[in-house]
Image: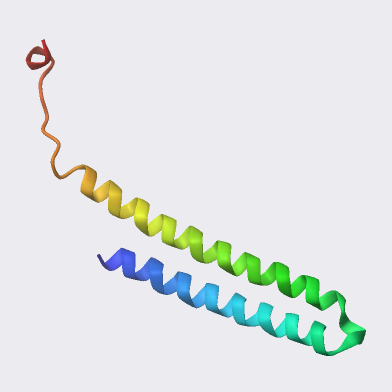
Length: 82
């Protein structure tokens, strides 16, 4: 469980930082007309933050499923399968 919380905390920190940076860039590009190119960069940054968060949650879910898949499996010898 400790590694899952480390991955979740890292994902929250990195995703939140990138998301806040993207929102600031988007708002600067929206409010200040001379920097309109920042609006498109801000949209891309927000989208990247969402993908970072989803990939982190996918890693946690994959790790949990791998841990649970070994619990109920029983080892059998080749002669038992016949």
